Length: 289
Image (cartoon, rainbow, N blue to C red; front, top):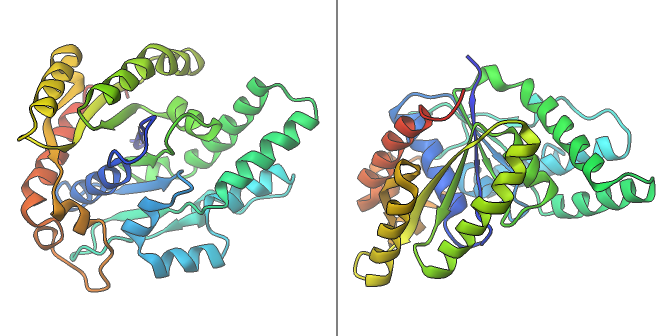
């Protein structure tokens, strides 16, 4: 059975998007024995460094095994390396070597995207044709590895770029981590009304949208009321689990050269991250296969 593809996105940065991606990949790999792949589509490369470590990430860049080189080859009308060769195996710093792999990003990805669009525009391509081309090449790479995994997470950049849109079009489910405040809720409403509708039109079917409250502070009445309002409006699309603003979440994002147990890595947040993974498995069953 091919992998379920989950794109993780928010219009805003700083909401815990990459931390959520990595935490889910690790708890699914460790506690549910899932074969899990993280594809880092964000030029900020946070997920790549969190789950692979800075030394491995440097080596992948040196070996030209990051997504920018893959797509740059297409843009230059050269034969790219097989998508499978970009995958770095068993990348997590958790003990027990759970089956978690990585396709890393690099900061140059942003430049590659800009230059690619500029090149196509000069050749007379309309933006819709460029988007279709990116979607086809992205899908081409994914098809090579879909049967190797149970779940594939794509950590998208903030906002909607052409590559992020391609990831959303390909996704079986879209996960939006959000801080439960008024401004974030307005952004989420806008995303659901406009961007998601456009994406579903282009994919020819509906992706299932799920929303997760992150950096949650139970002591703040604003967070409580906004999270409750999201749950009321979204129903089963809203995660019951709320990920707190907690120092142990920040510490877990720091790479350790010495392998750690899940409990040691996530500290007081380990039960919450595990519960998030359990709920994620249940919710993903609601998404169309």
